[in-house]
Length: 509
Ligand SMILES: Cc1cc2nc3c(=O)[nH]c(=O)nc-3n(C[C@H](O)[C@H](O)[C@H](O)COP(=O)(O)OP(=O)(O)OC[C@H]3O[C@@H](n4cnc5c(N)ncnc54)[C@H](O)[C@@H]3O)c2cc1C
Image (cartoon, rainbow, N blue to C red; front, side, top):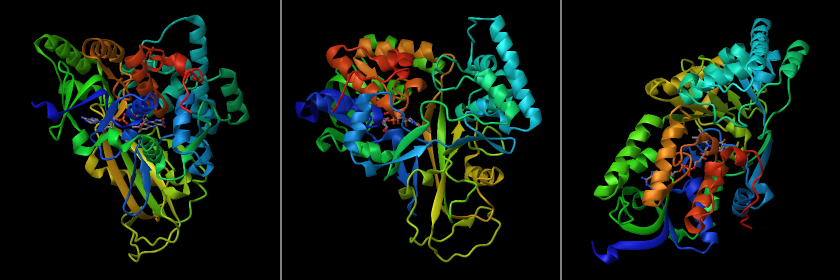
């Protein structure tokens, strides 16, 4: 290998999703030497947005920003600084249950269910409260026990078990419960009983009751704009950014085009299992690498996400109204969540005057006029989980999704479909499995202490509870500060603490 073949840099960042862009933003702010590489042609990773040839935009499933960090806010504000770069929305979210739309959170709104199911839910909730009083301090062993302890058997059977299985592709008995933190609303028994008797609904709960969304280019527009704040010469994208091999002994990364980068610090945001596959060391390192691979195989579980998008001609119907995202626990539809993506921005759909031909009616047996016609248009984005425990018939998925959309009243059989989108993302959700913590507590410190590799991000550090865009961005920022200054990485190691407050330690602006 001649010396000219090797580019040297202080910090190499693998991946230009939110985590990699967080790392690069921090390195840029500090004026340090770095490169950022990604196998994809565009930055953004799982927070990217695709556009169909007809002009409908679809994210990688429902992406809503709820930031815990001033630094993250600064970064996206600097990238998209104008008021008209964003739209703001009230969360309008429902669960489809027993033929009804139950406002989210389900547990506070069982008043919307038929009487027999309301009784089942309230009965289970009271039994759970009694049991908690008899067993104070008891710690549930898995997610299923947590659900029953906090919500009772009724809500468990009607919503929590089937919905979570549809999302994770793993039974709740095989998931841990430490990850939950603020994400799942613990019901107040008195409120639930009062609402169930008075037939009232409970108001918006939780952190993301309002949210803002980019006016143009979907969620991916944020990350394109963030990447544009950095010098383009720092990016290696596409084939030249695809990591083929990491030689940890010599600290050299070899890319698909044969080019090599020698680094002092490596921040990797590619999935941990993929990283271990391309990691090589000298003879002394083999045992550590082997042990990490075994730990990953035994403890790390993930599911794939398939995103389906449907573009429809016509006025958005009243039954859809200003709904944002909707949950589907039952098996009358293959998707677990639907987002009315056209409600997030008028630019998520083609403008009304664009003429598009109909591809099919929602009920594909109905005949239709093939002549291109003007809009208006609206769109639905749907998410399906696939895992080793939850197979999906990919050949029939679009057909079954449209049927599911009709049977759950999202669509009518006569709706004119003008655009269809389907894409599978192999690593979609990092499952909080029972063996996860043991695996990551073995792998992440070994990578850092023995190889000076900080593996961070949604699948880099495999912690769902700090795997949203704001967390991911800050995992990258904090990994850089840790590598350069030894600063503790609070998001990775103190996730509950970080999630419970607004973090003001760093500012970009
Ligand atoms: C269905 C779904 C819904 C979500 N909803 C929300 C939400 O509502 N709110 C929210 O804030 N977040 C949400 N997220 C999470 C958000 O997408 C992630 O926080 C974010 O994308 C993770 O960033 P990352 O950089 O860690 O990983 P990624 O985005 O996965 O980026 C990793 C990058 O590494 C690159 N890479 C992989 N292997 C290689 C290789 N060998 N060589 C070079 N490059 C490589 C990939 O191309 C990719 O660009 C959601 C995610 C999904 C899947």
